[in-house]
Length: 290
Image 1 (cartoon, rainbow, N blue to C red):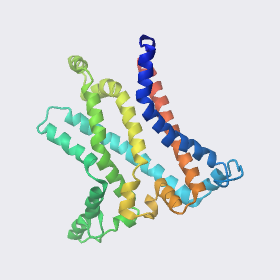
Image 2: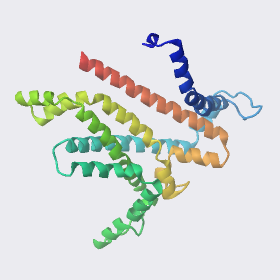
Image 3: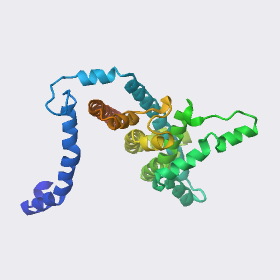
Image 4: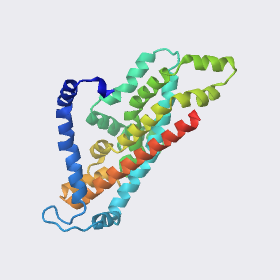
């Protein structure tokens, strides 16, 4: 396809994308390569090569393992939950119902509300003297310190789902509206029920959108640090001490070895997860086509 363009057009195109390309190379690619190289040395300047010693020490660190476990638990619960809920909402809003536009807009609001406002809202709900504890008090129940107890993980999951539900729902809505209605009409003629149509039509044609939503949800789950930091500070309850907290605290302590090594490990893990998701998608698509 590129052969149809003249050399002049190609040069103009390269000049147009050059600023963005240079910016990515200078501010993203080069620093990451430097981090990977630095993670194998004991000092940033005139250091000695120590191979995988920094990684072995990091994995042996109990605080890091706790942060890794909490992040895995949070991602493992919140991502499937937000995908299922957003898909259900998208299917409901894809039907002929009243106030459809108003409902769609209401689910988009969390995307444009500043994080500080979101935290103030949830603090008002989950604080020790918040709304939920006042409701519990009406039933003679003892108040719960939600943010300083094992329930803190549930609070963070609620915030994550509330913030990302609308965006995922819009993606699913776009995918649903791209499915030809003739398929559903043909299924109705054949006497297919709602579940049959969902599994044989909706899930099949929604597959690319679903995998895209999965990847976006996983990436967003690793970006939940701002909310937890504003809720509980640098050292929250141990149940919500995430990898992002560990990275932030190592930066504050100027412990660059742990900071860089943990950042590289997190990037590798994210890459492997996304790679596995893409491989699963390709296998499912081959199975469907076959």
